[in-house]
Length: 502
Image (cartoon, rainbow, N blue to C red; front, side, top):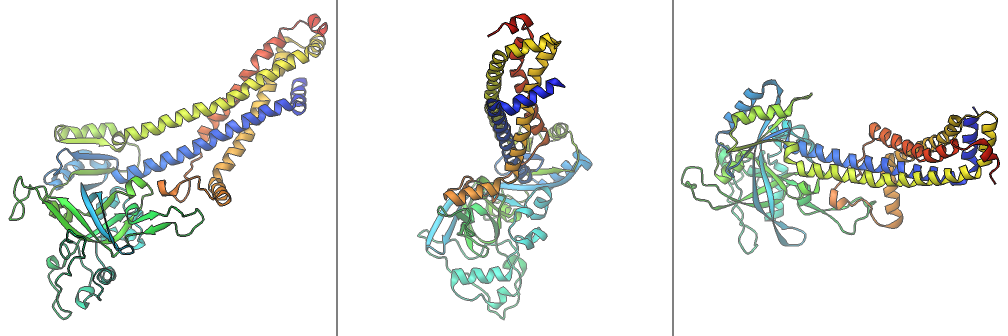
């Protein structure tokens, strides 16, 4: 009992010990906050990447893709059986984007990644529909490439300054054929396409179809450099549903017919109406990606029945993904196909995050190590200062083990109090980190968390109980370990020599 009384008395009367408690507290709190933020970023990044690419990806090495992808889809389902939840064929290519800024009367041109998808299958295999901005398309992703009468009226009014003919605006226009003709090289507006009179009969679907596209949020908007965190309108729109864009592809030449000859490639411009915006809150993706219907992509590039990759989502539950990949590789020759998991494809990014997180943990643990050296110095001073008191305790019957236990218990108490206060402080900061960031931004006028880089509205965090426990155990061990040397010195003092000490 006397050990606990002495430890508590020293804790309350030794103000230098309080400095050690504060050091441990700040170190623990900093580690908890950093791990929570890093974990939040890593998990959000991995969730988005996995949602965009699915669990397993089969990619054809040829830029023109694999022939008869429907047979490949059936083969995947046959090989993997009940472990397959969905298979989404994808055609990915690069294109030159061109659109006119209505507000500034200028033309923007830039390279983009264009992905041809089946919206229903893509939604089943990933996060496509949840990233769409129109709630109606989230409920019915199969309609995302349908040009509604409202969008057609808006497009006609914006680009030709005349009301849309009643015949065209009377019914939704399915996708498939380009509208108008490519814009001229001098940037002038394209001529209006020939339209049937309002009383003309409804044309066949093949003749009435128009192209539709879903544009990435970072392409359609940009973050105003003068925008403040508290501003309601931080993003400036340059493209919206109903606007027109032009995409310049390169045909593959693998098709047949009068327009495509084997071995001949040519630029293929086509006009699209924007039907929705895609926002996955990853600036690198949102600012470079455009989705179109896979059938439109096949027609534009002249690769009917082809797909460049198959994205496979597995059913919920544990899977031996490595074994599944090996089974697929046995049916998809390595010379023609790449079969990888999404983690293997993004190995460099995930490894970089893991290394960065480990380095930060090591560096921040040095804060607690500094507190440990402080405990060592303070305990050494206490042993020198209390040498006579130690001699009295030993002469009254205290054992060497008991004296050593006093100092070890004191170090344990410092570690427990510091770790407990640090945990409370770290968890509180993590929970209210967005409110604190808003308050600092409001006070200083400077954003700590740049939304123009991440496009996140909030700082992502994830509180991991195991990580908090590991930090607390580490802090307590450092505190106790720092008190071992002074405790041994006190335990080895002889009562007579201690009583004669000045």
